[in-house]
Image (cartoon, rainbow, N blue to C red; front, side, top):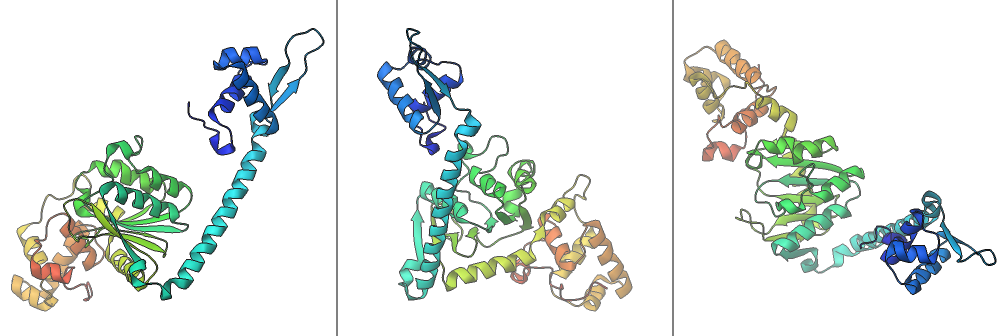
Length: 358
């Protein structure tokens, strides 16, 4: 049977004997019956437990049978062991941080080939994703879009649908900022599943259409991106260590984060009762917004006055819950109201976000 107390230097047999003592067995004979072990294994386990100050032995009175063993109360017995193990972990963590500082200090003189590494195979990519998250001390930044390397349902928390490592790190206080691609949000159940669960644990999420790549960054010390720009499956990735490339990836994420739409605003545009599609006039207005024309020129194109154009524009923004033209463009694109033409995609926004809304 697996030992839940192995981290405290108890092997499975010692745990079995200790738990039998907790359940009321007090003599070697009773322990043999309760644990299904030989007398020799029971005595060896008792000796080990005595050395750890987890068990006390009381000699039998003359002629009164076997010696009796009583467990020390668990909350008292294991507290010192837990404190000792926590101190070991703290010392190990400090040493790892020292090694990391030495690694970063020597990075400028390192062979450029050492600054990146290729991870191949789905299983290896999944392991790297987990290791990267566990290495973070302050924050994880990520871009979430298909394809997914870790979509195996056996690896998901059955209660939340989240990856266990992310849930663990969020509970430890590591911050998560994630940009979700609209293509990955097609299944509405994700909001009630893993995304909703992550939000409840403190994840800060935003939404963007046509994100350029998947990405995961732990603090400012390591990043993971796909080897191929648009693979059908995530079978290989590039690990980026401290370098100019890593700095660029960190800045690139911040640029995208500034352009992405907060997920609350995205959901507001998709709430029940939201409009199914734009009217003919709204569709024409949105199409013109992607061209970069001035408001006066767009008004002439629509055959309306400048004041009427402004009124229709503000009415459309209010209808989609947008406060800026950029948000209007993002919201309309997420709803499929704006055709993704090469010219519009090249500008990456509604085309006139630099102009005032009034």
